Image (cartoon, rainbow, N blue to C red; front, side):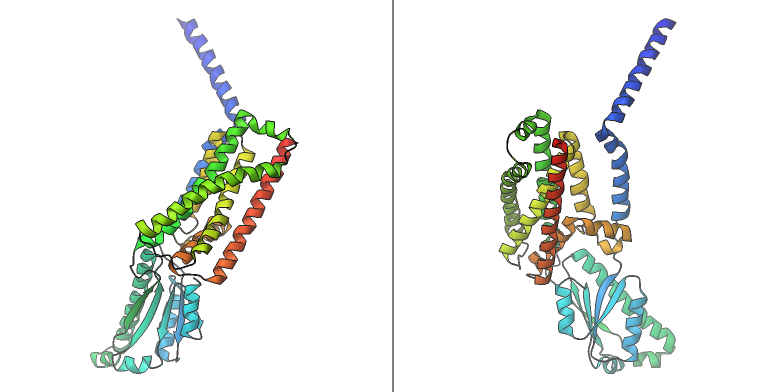
Amino acid sequence: MNNQFNHSGVRLRALIKKEFLQLARDNSSLLLGIALPIMLIFIFGYGLSLDVRNSRIAIVSENTTADILNIVARLKLSPYFKTFKTNSLQEAKQLLKEDHVDGVLYFQNDFSKKLNQQEASILFIINGTDANKARIIQSYVSNAFNNWQEYNTDRLGNKENIALQGNVTVIQRLWFNEANSSTWFLVPGVIVLIITLVGSMLTAMIMAKEWERGTLESLFITPVHPIEIIIAKIIPYFVISIVGMFLCLIAARWLFMVPIRGSLLIIIFSSSLYLIVALAIGLLISSITKSQFAASQIALLVSFLPAMMLSGFIFDLRSTPAIIQFTGQLLPSTYFMELIRTLFLAGNVWSMIIKNSLILIGYIILLLSITLMVTRKRLD
């Protein structure tokens, strides 16, 4: 009986040692077991934030009085605002349209005079693309003015003087999302996530499948050049994915009633650029790993999850730590997310269209060049 237990123990130790050695040789298992938890805690820990900080507010004032300076100073001291002085309301509106500011605070020329007459009002225009964020900023601004009025109450100290400083009415205008619906904000972002997932997974899985079957090596011994193989792999999946993208656009417009205020041709053009980026990411992954399982996990980890958490889809990147903001700026999905939301809700903002399209083209060249280099190295 004791001998049986001893033999069983020896066999068990040998099997455990064999499994550890196999685990050490299998990079994909080590990646899933060690790197995945670290990346997930990094992404979710820092990327999840419902706070809205550093909201960019353009200040337009036709006159400079002590009251206006006092209000602006209080906004500057708040961690929730970053204020910018602009020369005209027209300039501030253009900054709002180009998404350089989140809101515009407009003081009329006779603000201080009307304040003494208890008729003062301030126009606050806010980018309502993200309905939830707009509501939070509106409450921040209202609270800032309430605090300023309470400060004046404490400073003046008696009812007679308080009456001289009347209440300020904040007239709020919501731009780009007059329905104040979060669906308008989320649906364009969902299209980005769908293109990311479908594009990267399609090429990653299919190429890895061919590596596993050995059919890709068969192609490499023919006179076909690696770049020709890569282009041939991209085109069919690009066609399939673009059909899916059209269906998403139709659903967004006719099912979810999201307005399309920009040019449909530019939306299709920019979506095609980003789709090629997603396909190139999948090709790069499959050129590094030749396992379908590992390719699917890596594609999920490096494309879909960052696009969902760090591209501004749900959370405002400006409220996150600097390292998360920097990581988000490295993602191609961040630029496409910003572009497609603007095209859907604000219209054609050419400065953003040109800049973000050039960035996506740069990612295409970079990713395809790395894929070609890695594939050639594998063949050597």
